[in-house]
Length: 485
Ligand code: ADP
Image (cartoon, rainbow, N blue to C red; front, side, top):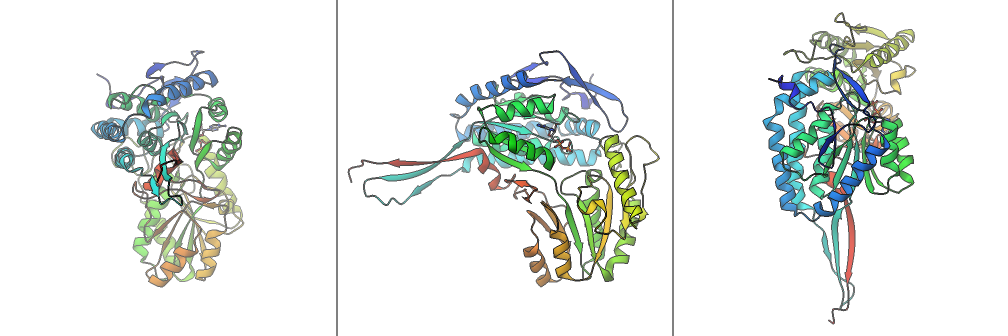
């Protein structure tokens, strides 16, 4: 009998309802970051396979677009049920390839199902308008229709739920999709093929290709059949895709990098702030785009906050994500370890004080100690650069105005958090922060009902909420004349 985590481990691409290998037969290895062990292979597909996937999606679109909103909604409900019936198996697969704790992996799979259910509901509410006409003998209709073939490119940090946010609204809108999951964590992406089959979603509606990112990305951006690209990943690759997509004027949604500030005012509830800080910093071992990058703490509460944050981060249990009780899994790979190490080295050289962690974990491999650095200064690299790892730098500020200026002094504008018990301050700060997501006295705020998305160089468009389906729809104005009135 297969181990439960193997049930959804599909080592092939899903194109037009068929499970296929790369044309060349070449494969890439996939490893478990907790053990370094190779857990399987995936096809190394390129341009030709991607083109076939796009053509399969276009062929499927011609019939899928005619399926009623109610029937698409029912498909998504079945997809939700299939995910939840297999939550444990999918969570184990996710933990095995990504490293995150089983607790977080179960949460992510639950979140995937929640997105799918939300869009099952939204599928039935893509209302248009009937507009009062300025002409007696004409009528004006505004309708919404699916854009067509959507291409989705997703990262390794949330390999299940990032695709849920894209596949869910695509199917709800009547679009078909070609997805490219990250090479480090492809199985949680390929699993969507099996899930779609089990939910009875027609062949060609969901297609998944793995392999060379630049070849797949090149074909996706160049091919005129693709009408929308939805990308979650680094700002660097996002900018490249925007440039490439300009040639065929595609719709684009971009969920890019962040540099989240976490403000703690003198009047904050200290224990609540520390609890929020741990969640907002160390979730997924610091590897999320909404993870705190900079703690900004007011002078009077600074020392106490640093002390409590260091204690709480020292108490986090680091280990293999598959072991019950683990709170911090390994980093995704050794490059991530080196990147975190070099940021700590830079900070220490410039006067930073390591008050918790600070080095590779004794477990070896890509395990790293949750780290807190006091005395953080503007000249340190993490002021501008996204850390994407378990380092919590703590800066000091004096006034509210200074805090808002420091918080906004970045090219990014995804998530921010602040803690205060003063209602007036809460409104002033909330309105002063140039961020797409704001947590007030809360460190984890993502939910399917609310729009997720950044301002400035953090991205374009929203995922989740009723807004999340808009980018998958084209608006059409219809003027009906000659009515003889
Ligand atoms: P991360 O730093 O999280 O790995 P990336 O932006 O490099 O962020 O990766 C996010 C996704 O973008 C992954 O699926 C990756 O394979 C893909 N990707 C990377 N480079 C390109 C590219 N040139 N064209 C298309 N996709 C790319």
